[in-house]
Each structure stands twice: as C-alpha cells, then as structure tokens.
Length: 310
Image 1 (tube, rainbow, N blue to C red):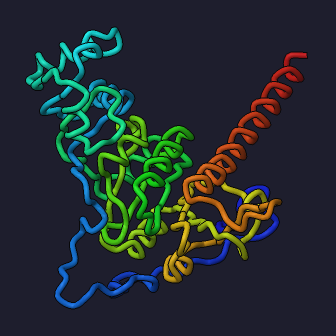
Image 2 (spheres, helix red, strand yellow):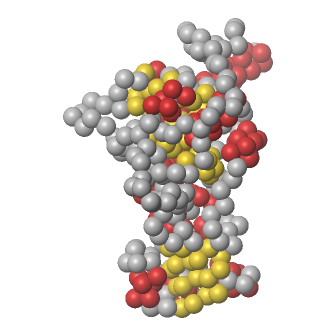
C-alpha cells in the first residue's frame, strides 16, 4: 500500500507540496478599515472577557484550574447544594465572595442572563499552536482539531466550542484578527466546555494550516456546495476540520490550503446551514465513522478469538 493511500480507499491522497517561509497574505475577504482607524487584535471583543456568568460556566470554572478573583452571587444560590461547597473552597483559596441582589448582577452583565451568579476570572489563556498539536497527538493516535475561519458571532463560536468538546475533539484554532475571541458570551454559550478544550489563537491562519499539514493533519474545509459529499470522505488519521463563517464561508486562501472541500447534502429548500450546526454535523460524521470502524474491528477480533478456541 502506498504511503498516501488511505486504508479502505480506492483513490490515493494527493501529493503534498510544502512551502515554508511564505510571506504573510491578507485574507481575500478582509475589508479595509477606514483611514486613521487603528487595527486591534480585539476588534470583535466589545465586552469584558474576564467575566463569566451562568450556572454551568461558573461551576466548570470552580471545578477547573481557572484562577477566580471575585464572585457575585445571589444569597439564595450561595447556599444551594450545587454551589455551597465549591464557593466555600473558592473563598478558602482567596476568592472574594460578594452576595448581591439580581439588579446588581444585571448591572455587571449589562442585562445578560446571569442565572444568579457572575465570576471575574483571570484572562483566558490561549495555548501556542505547537503546544496544541503536541497535546492533541498525546491524547489520541488520530486527533481531530477544529479550525474556525472568520467566525465573528460569539454565540456561534461558543456553540462550536461546546460541540467540539462534546464530540471528543482535541482542540480549536481561531484567527486573531476579524474573528471572535474568547469572551464572556462565548464562555456562557460554551457551558463549561472551555475548561476541557484548549484553544490556539494565531496571527496567520494560512501559516497555521501549513503547520498542521507538516504535523501530519489532513485538512477538510466545509462548503455550502461544490464540495465532495461529507459521507463519502474517509476520515482516517489526524483530521483538521475547517469551518468558515455563515456569510462568507471559507476564504479563497483557506480553500487552497485544504486537502479536500466537503459539503453536507441538504434535502430541503434551505441553501445553507449555520456555522455551528455545520460543525456539529461534520464532527458527528468523523466520529461516527471511527465508532463504526471500532465496532467492526471489535467484532472481527471476537469472531477470530472464538474460532481459535473451537
């Protein structure tokens, strides 16, 4: 079997040409900022990224390794069985616990659905891409990493993070510019998943994709149409799933960096899917194939064992 041919596949993988040291390229769909406007890596973050709120995110932070500076909580919730021991331990570790009324919580969160508790945490610690790749390979012989290309809606990003962790993927890569970072809204929607899913934030997404290729990952970009049907792809080995924004999709430069473009077959009149929904469907197909392979191999092994004993 040749090196570039997948087990069980009728066609060989395309040969890869590596090109190191490429100059930085701007994304094709990037819109120029008005003259005199400074460019910030935090362009899309208009809220305080150090605040998280809601019961699930705060519980996840209390149970995890995040440093929590202060917690505002309604008196009734403080003595709730789900929070009492966690808050007592947090106070012993130096966290300030402040009992407040719902109006104060609404002020702190600017009217968000706080569910009776808000925490001020240390800023989210992104990991370096090299560290993310190393951790992913250590955790799985066939790791899966999600790459989000230009997701600006924090609700979409939070939902993608929640699905990615729930499906057992090993990490997420997001660009630094013109994309949502890890804010309080993202943490709220992710519902604690960020405590278990490492995220790398990169300056040059194209270069990051090349690094993933060099590390042995095969990149599959999602397209609304014109891609190979999702269920016909054999997702073996290390996989990088690249998902673009709902409006613009993948940039042309990102498309060219992918080994294959894939599409989710739709039977209705709706022409495309929300980015977080497309992520969920694509990730499910990846892990469905792997679970099917595992069940098949377990069945073959069991049958072989029975024949040897007879």
